[in-house]
Length: 115
Length: 114
Image (tube, each protein chain N blue to C red):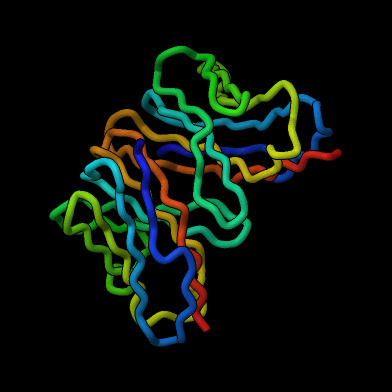
């Protein structure tokens, strides 16, 4: 149980375009989802926390207008990278939990390359 | 504020030798502590977690970790390394009241030598 999927697993886009990444909890209802970013050979950095039906809470230094997060249902959260630039290239990982205080279950990640 | 320090960004052990990956934490409230493993281009897999129950926690694949409050440590061990253990390992802390955010350490890359 507690499976989280991400789609796509990898994506290449051109500079200036937008790309959407989906995070789904397959066998449980996730009230809370988290989005992380991981640069090569580095740790995971929390970008934002999203609760179903409400606006996401962004970490300091994360541009909310650039990284749009939507958590419209209990099983789906999306991260849209708008006007992508090469520096946005990274590995994006989501996690989901039943409630804020519960254990997070991590997705397999999405590799974004902006050319 | 919480923080996690993983000593040693790279650790090499011989196959069959003891694995010891170090993690120290800082937290003003009782912490939840986690160890995750990450294989290349993959997400995180939970190895084990401490949530204020038994201080010696057993996880998957033969790993275990001991919570030592006096030393603010949560080191990960495995008696005998396998080649398949070669991966990146992350320690994470979450406060048990409040934001519940996970703060990750910088990771330790484990290399297993034949």
